[in-house]
Image 1 (cartoon, one colour):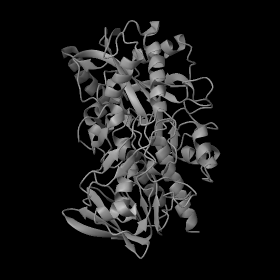
Image 2 (image 1 turned 120 degrees about the vertical axis):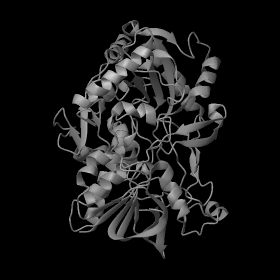
Image 3 (image 1 turned 60 degrees about the vertical axis):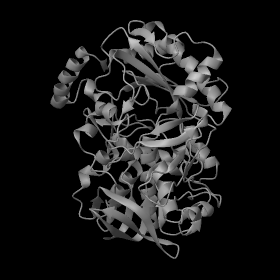
Image 4 (image 1 turned 90 degrees about the horizontal axis):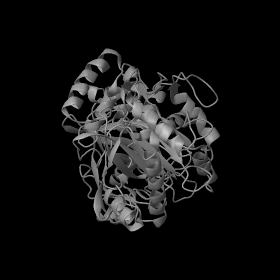
Length: 529
């Protein structure tokens, strides 16, 4: 159990790192993942996410501490528990964010992280069926395609946006982000292309790549202040996996700070309270938690060519299973969130600060609340939140979930942006193009009073599944990692996941996390020369 490099966490960042490092046969790599192999039909069939999301199937299914901004409710934070991480259970949307997001990282002092710096790593990962141009690549491992069998209502949503003066955008990763259009997805011939499907499953036979699944990392081990190994629980016993060169932590915005603190890196007083020996006092570990707070509007539909609970819908679903197994097409290939938009809450701002996800079914409370009949939904999320949260330990037991405080709406600016976003979303959903489907708006029908609307938003808003920032990258001594993703205060340890983002990007976070993994692997290889 001795390797050159050990990667903790088989999510979007970890899969990219482990795969790229093991391309060199002279480098031995071990990838440690707490979940399974992530290749079951529930992962491969895109629409199966509807069954995974509200359950603990391949899902850590975290609950937050009570959120004052959500009227005291506990939030819900699904996170993937399998090779591929959250890319095994997400909506598969391929979105990079705005180029200004990365230029902002650079302007904070993070040399090498401006958009022109990170674009080569996006391109290296991307295998886009549309072909090559200055902003796209067709030969990368992550398969990116147009939605295979989009619903008619998705085009109606796009037309509705244009009827309300939102410009058409056929490529959210093109020169302009603003506008309304159809998402591209990380699929290959109608099957989900998770980070594991892209980077790990095709290379499981590499003799220099060892993949340990159902292996839970419990502690990073140090000699003096150098990371030398990982203590894991695997096949019923404790084992040590040693790293001769470096350990790369890729647990995500919740698990990475949790494992750092369990290993003695974090706020000293907090570690001592939990009986943990302090290796390095790092007060910002677990701070700076950011996420896209989100509100979902749902409508009952007058038509059944959208998802729903009905006898006819069940028959349609059975037919769809056979169609998908035959050629990867049909409704089982849907990401549900087929259409979307990037909008500005005010014309004065320089980049979109609101995002819409249009869903071809009713989504209520993360699909945990079901409605009879058919319908459609639309999410609106705040892309540039001012609110910040924290991740803390509940105990020194790794089996105990961390204490997650999202801090949603702790800054009034976020609620104001959400209120504006709701009105822009409703205007689109009430446009003529959607009239054939529109029957009844749930929860907010007829509500115009700002105080009443604010209460409903606080009662129902939650995450859109993009937590980041808890191991912030920066040039200050207080930042958790430096621009080479090395953990400050110790040696031999880097982090490659969404936790390193100093500011949340304006879009879905899977593609950017894979980019971080690609860039980390490149930096590790360069450091060997």
